[in-house]
Length: 77
Image (tube, rainbow, N blue to C red; front, side, top):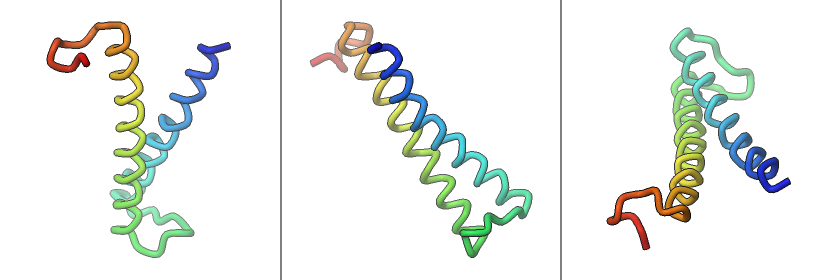
């Protein structure tokens, strides 16, 4: 059950990051989202979604590896 909860915790920010990539890709091909008025704003929102998702997933993996002592000595507590 714990692994399923961990998968769900990782899946949600991963989906947010993927949606951010989609928004940025659509801006490159001039496909505007109906709720976002400008393409440059769409790109910034997509970049923000991507960075937030990546930050969360990377932090989760780093925390797990630090707990299991699989990181360099300078990153251990």
